[in-house]
Image (cartoon, rainbow, N blue to C red; front, side):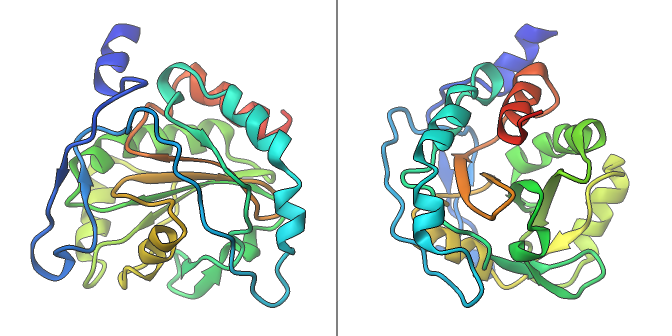
Length: 229
């Protein structure tokens, strides 16, 4: 079974990017596989919103980001350390009940933030594993937040969630592409899926472009390191 997981989500994978038709043309690329080998891209300085932690607060967490990234092995080896760590508390999307929220609303929790879409095949493949991770590790101190970025209404994402038995992930949404474009401007999103590991103060510790196997022991070790669990 372990060999099968490695074949689906290898630690180092070339990226195949396909264009997205219609309203998403040119805005988002789909990852058929997930990692650019040797990616050393640096994120631009964070834009700090009112009430957010200052850039120095997050920038001082370089050693913690490296420690977390060192724990990213095997199935989650594509996780890269934030360079430098930056505040993401101002990232905005809609809560499962449709009300606007930001990551600041999850202050006190370590968050694994994942952006996905129903038209993205690798996203669809990894959703059950993200669901399993939330079921196993979700708590008052950790949450998987999977944000669907399909444009239009909620019909397609709700149908997919129902058909695949996703029962522990909240139906977070952003149908405007604003969240993806924010991460793109920060140098964090190259396509979908994209996953960010954010600490309890809203500081980015690590990030990954492409899918991974989130239900295994490698992911559990990564989350334990990030949460101190």
